Length: 297
Image (cartoon, helix red, strand yellow):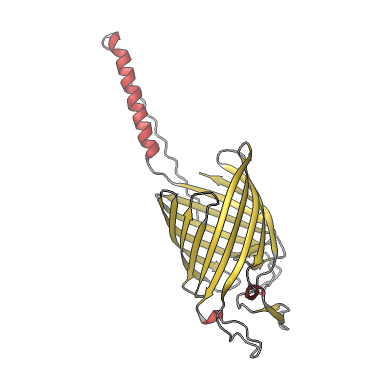
């Protein structure tokens, strides 16, 4: 997907004739200044395309607590463009050393490749301090089945930035994922900020895929997974280099929110991996650290 960029800049040049009385020249100059200012204000108020391009380098890839990449570092480029509340974004994950986990199975372990591309379309409507966003996500992945989600998000622009989101999978993994998150930035030196955040997830499995592991049968024949899933706390910094370019180092700590989320039953003889109670994998205590670079336009 090509990076969209549109810059609207209008220059007004007024040519005045020197014909007439000198007493009228200041008046004409004033009229020209007022007209130019009005034109510039009008242009400034017109909506324009905004967006950002970024790339992050991290030690692993975690998605909703599930471990996708674990042995090499990952690169995550993204592009976003917005206009009048509508947004389109592209995100990808490149793993330099793909390794199988209970949540991801690769066809060529040990190799480096782009193993996920996400495309998101959304619309945001703002009412005072409340922002409501609805949208669609397509997940193109190499370690599982491709799938699609619709989502709704409500965010309040107050201290802590409380945000609640609901994601509904309508394709390969029918289920609802709920997430409550908080984020707050504190200025520490000039334009540098300390960024703190936390999130908490809950999963409601709806399709037969989400049946849990039953030790008596040795198969996934138990009740569908329905419990708290993942927790995450984050600390980082945003360091502006220019008005448009910034650097953001960060550290995240992921952990299970329930016994069911981390429950396993020994090792699978074929894969050498633990057998998780949740068919999509188990959540463990994990550190994610790295740095992101963002250019906004």
